[in-house]
Amino acid sequence: MSKAQWLAAVSSVLCATVTAAERFENIYLSFNLPDGWKCKQEETEFVCTPPSPTGKNYPAMMIMAAKLAGPDDTLAAYKLHLGQIPPATGRGTIVKSPIQTDIQGVLWIDATLLGSEVENYYTRYMATVKGDVAVLFTFSVHKSRYEDFAGAYTLVTQTLKIKQDAMKQGRR
Image (cartoon, rainbow, N blue to C red; front, side, top):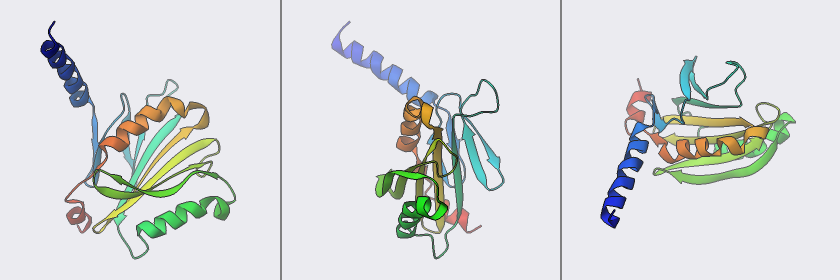
């Protein structure tokens, strides 16, 4: 097999893998779902979970919520709040201090805490404001399974996109 044929074969496999990924999409954002994950709307949030053999105990989950941004919805306010959760609630530990990060051209506040939502679970928080819309995205995973789900979180964050028309949708 020539080098060109080999590259063509590898490219076709990679393209098929990327295009085969199931996508989560709502009016505010979209991202590729890890294999087997399912999402459903629960009141004002969307909750995504991996396949579970028992059907009830999930070692990981993602939650997305969006709303019209108010005066307190700023990146600076999110950064301050995420840094204060453990002292304010008396539980949890900051694993990764809140920082500003760029994902797909949108600035997010990104922090990881342990035990802030559920004991023994890491929760990675990502929050942003784009136009009139505030978005919170969390990814929680049991500390014993953290490494098992690292690839899932990477896939989601690398494909996470805030929709260009999110501001228009938020005004409705």
